[in-house]
Image (cartoon, rainbow, N blue to C red; front, side, top):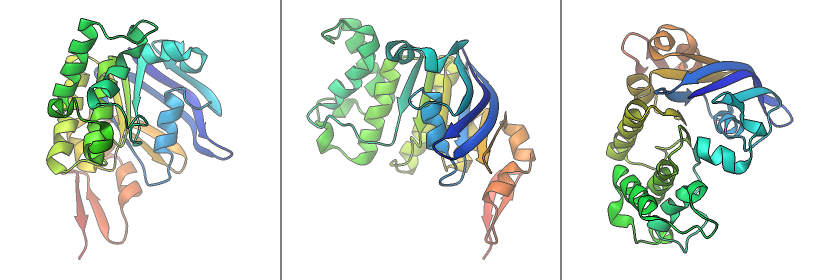
Length: 252
């Protein structure tokens, strides 16, 4: 599976990213970096076909994503946003079960196989114990893991996640990042996630996408570390980025 951006511009009245080109392939774990307001969330929504491109083309498996029906996109790509579930009356199991919608009948009834996939997805993100809890009764971090489990249950070759570690504590943050690494490698998925966790991005991702000054730069992680892009993006009078170690140093 390949995801290809060809001269893609995204945004609203004013472009946030212009003329972007990138090629992502099966097995890629890609971190999307950028300052607040740079357009990370907007770019992900455009890549998912949820918003119309200003110009250019996004190809998923060689197919223009914006020419596919919603049901066709749902079999190719799953999306996790930072929003809580909009169905507080459902249990975690039921919300994750919605991820099987592209494969169920019109009644949405889960088969034994569907239920097994849901159970596996809950287990993968460590929330099997929440299966029968209403999502209105769980924390933001737990809710985020429910939505990630839903994306896993959808079983698509491409997964897009908008700041998936935002509501997680430190151990769960690294556990999730390691899970994404394992899924991209073992199941040969293309996984793209926006993040402010530079250490996670540099240690676990094989490719980095970086938005700066309306330009999207995509490089293998070692090349990105050695370039000046991260230094230009994050350095300030109080912060330095060390390309040799990948560490950020605070000036005291």
